[in-house]
Structures are given as structure tokens and as C-alpha cells.
Amino acid sequence: MKKQNFLKGWLGDRRPLLAQEITTLYSDIERNALGAAILTGFSQVAKSKEVRSYLLRGINIAKKHVNIFSELLQGSDVSVPMGSDSLVTDSAEVSPFSDKLMMLHTTGMTTLGIGFYGFSMSTQTRKDIGANYIRLVGETLLYAEDGANILIDNGWLEEPPRMVDREELAKTEKRKG
Image 1: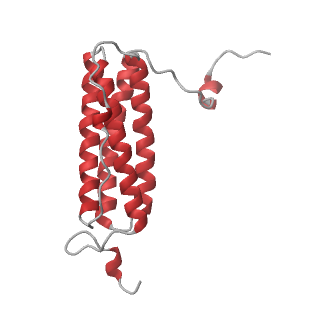
Image 2 (image 1 turned 90 degrees about the vertical axis):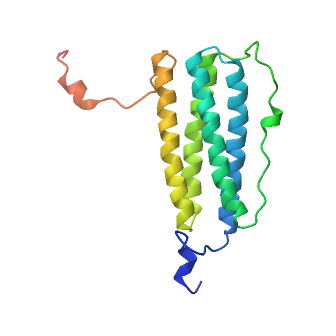
């Protein structure tokens, strides 16, 4: 590299994508397309209106992210992976899963997706792509928080193991000896 313009990307001409940028964008498209397909199946059989609404919102977010990443690839004349919505059946009568299980799976996929976005962000050197990831992580974090609130409100989320709060323990009056 001989010029600073390698890092540009906000305005004006943008350099073609690097192989590592193409790889992460492509993977993020595939993950979001698969997530949208899973959420489509879940939304068709969810019993709770609140859960169904949450799942439908997730589909819209995933499709929006696919479009953003696809535009970046297409802007460098890179082909875009195909979606997998057509693989979802039209079943809407009997759910093979409980709303609780579908919500736990959805929030798990969402938090993993945030981690993947963090990795993808670390491989980008074009500023415009990094800025997209920052914005999309924020949106995904809000979605994840809303999912956690649904889990908590329904009593579906167990508190994970954590470190003892030593200050709180020291304040207790139950002393032996």
C-alpha cells in the first residue's frame, strides 16, 4: 500500500472490497438469511401474539441486514448468496416447539449474531462498512433486549450462575461463631 486512500470509504470513490471483507459480508448474509427462514417457521406456529410479533420483527431486521450487506457486495460486482425462505414449509397448525423454546433459540441466535458482527467489524478496513456494522449491532442489541424482556416477563429465563457479591455478603448480619 502506498496511499492513505486505501482506508477511505465515507464519501466519493471507494476501493474494491478485500477478500476478507467479502468473506465476512457473505457469511453475515448467509447467517441472516438462515435466521430469517428459522424465524419464519417459528412465527407460523407461535401461539403467543407477543412472541409472533417479536419473531416477525426479527425477520424484518434480518432481511434488512441482508439487503445492506448485499448492496455492499454488489457495489464491488460480487455475487450475493441466495436466501433460504423457500425451504420453509407452509405448516401453521401444530407447533413442534413451545413458544419458550422458540424464544430461547431466537435470543441465542441473536446474541451469537452480535458476536459474529463484532468479528466482522474487526476485519473491515473500509470506514463505511465498519459504520454499517456499528449501526446494525446497536439495532440488534435492542432486539435482543426486547427478547430477554419477553423471556423474563413469561418466567422463561433462568438466572445464570454468577460470582458471589462479596460486598453484599459482608453486609449480612448472619454471623456464626
